[in-house]
Length: 308
Image (tube, rainbow, N blue to C red; front, side):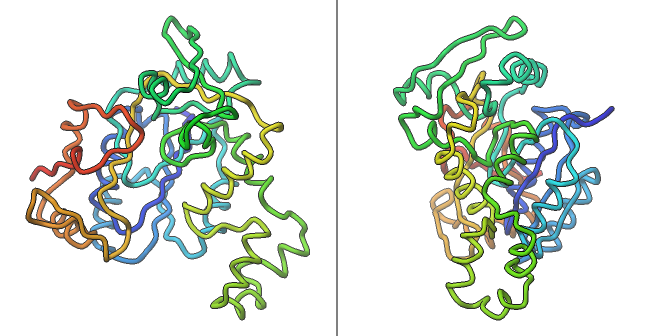
């Protein structure tokens, strides 16, 4: 069966959370539909990551060397109609009807920017954004105009947590942010001698940024989102959605200094969670399924571990 969605996932220092992402993803969307690519920042917990990757042999794992180049190589090899992005602290907690998504894109191809899996009607209405309703395959589907969004979430079109885009649109956006002059690319790429010589200076980063290079998932998202906002007249108006199926469960940052309480006694640094992971603890996806979040981001109340 030909894959229909290319899923590009970003991870660093979070094997426990990536395990939950992959487990919950394939419970909500058929593995037969998805080709997953994982860009893995090699820093800590290599042994745990390698063990996890062996559980998902169909995933294409790319050990990050230069984020910009690694991402573009994946993007250039994609031949599916759709692209879904993922971050390792996202969890899927409800079913996803791909046929509804596919038909929505077919029916509204001139109007649809993306199909969000993180928006629900109650949440969007509580934000004050107008919601339009339509019927797709006998089911209710909703839309909002991101160009008139009233919150930081609803006016932020290019996000990397849980929105399905056409590959054509993603490539258009990425191409729009980059300077495609071949001479510029040759002499001012991250691998160019001059840039390497200036690598430790702020000037090198500013120069690369001005040419459309990105250094991490954060800059990939924020810089391309800004381009969309500045070029909104060149892009479709609407984000479509049906129900909130995912939530980013944010309990730590991907560094070694963030400390949060866990059950009042432990901490939630990446080191502590990795030790829990080695001991057989896993994120309790079923708890989130039973206690569905209504917002796009959740915190400690949804973060439960169980020992398997």
